[in-house]
Image: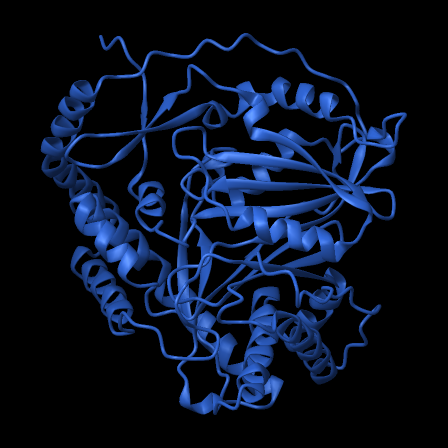
Amino acid sequence: MARYNYDRLSVQDNSFLLMEGPGAHMHVASTVIYDAEPLRTPDGGIDIDRIMRATESYLHLIPRYRQKLQFVPVFGHAVWVDDEHFDLGYHVRHTALPQPGSDEQLQRLSSRIMAQPLDRTRPLWETWIVEGLSGNRWAMISKIHHCMIDGSSGVDLAQVMMSPKPDRTLGEIPRYMPKPAPTSGELFRDELAYRMSLPAQALRSFGDFARESEDVVAEISKRAKILGSLFGMGFTQSASPLNGPLGPHRRFAWLDTPLDDLKAIRRALHCSVNDVVLTIVTGAVRNYMLRRGVDPAAIDFKVSTPVSMRSEEERGQLGNRVSSWIIELPIDEEKPVEQLARINETTQNLKDTNQALGVEMMMAVAEWTPASLLSLGAQSSGGPVNTIVTNVPGLQIPMYMQGSEMLACYPQVPLLEGMGVGFALTSYNGKMCWGFNANPDVVPDLPALVEMVEQSLENVADTAGVVLSKSLQPSLDLRDSTS
């Protein structure tokens, strides 16, 4: 029996480590805003000691928060091992804005924090507690490496960290007993044995596949067509004003829209909320191209839209169980109704043909590929997509952190090489929170793009005959917020 303990990263989790490079930091992040009153200290600050104490009480429920990476010699694959020198004070940090801190100043701070890589010698997460925000509010800026979490598991994680009631109870803190880590030699031996077992695993998997398939030949043919369609999209981005070399700086902006407005549009136009979101992005991207003097019809503008593959049995687990759709946005089309019709046709076809399965299959093949080759491939290109549009359904009830009500959550998706901006959305308690993560060297006018998203929403609503319920809450001007 082994005297050591570790968890091997899945090939998909490991891929997010391989995709990381200078300027390309693969952490997902969010800026969450809370009501400050329940955690207000007598001197007007935020009770950081209580937040630290509360964090300690749930760490045992999130083992990854006290684990760090160790790499297998030669193979380069990563494993999780317990950090025997874990220091909570390194991961939970306390800072402040000059009072009264504005949303613009918070966005600037978020931009600077997001632009910095996580320390791979420690557990891969940071939480920044920000006091001094105007309107009796405080903020929490969180960074978690993508190898630990995807969008769905992020929502599950929020339910561990927060409560649906304004409960200020502090739980017990179980004693932390780190398990011994393996030596490099032990890791190499185990990995070698694992690699040698892959052919037998593949045979067993094919046997299970054959038994569960009514028509094996038809199923293999179907999967071959799925892979063919993915490879047929090519491996390079179409040049556009929203794409360029990925530099070290970031600029972050956000926008609130009422979720009921998007649902009303969905009902009127007989489509999904995600189709509505993609149509809004299409209109904004089209107008941005025109603003930059580029003919939208000359660009094949493709987006990656993550699709959760997580089963009910996998709820609450960290790690990644996500695939993606690759969708060409009809930015050559001027009318929102025609944009939506083409997007809806595409998404229905992707559902019918199960394109997301193709990414799953490529991940399975990647298990056989040396990490060095995967790393070169991952860092050489962002793939055939121009940007990412991720929409994660969130909780539709108020959530509380030690009595402080969460008011909004603005997500941030990491940028891949060549991407100038990423769109991340999450719904919460009746609102849709948009987060825009941009490379200012490529997109120096992010506020203009955010305004175009607002205008595009209004255009789509007009098309659907929907009257927007209230004015939008836009991002503030970020002209001077380059990190």
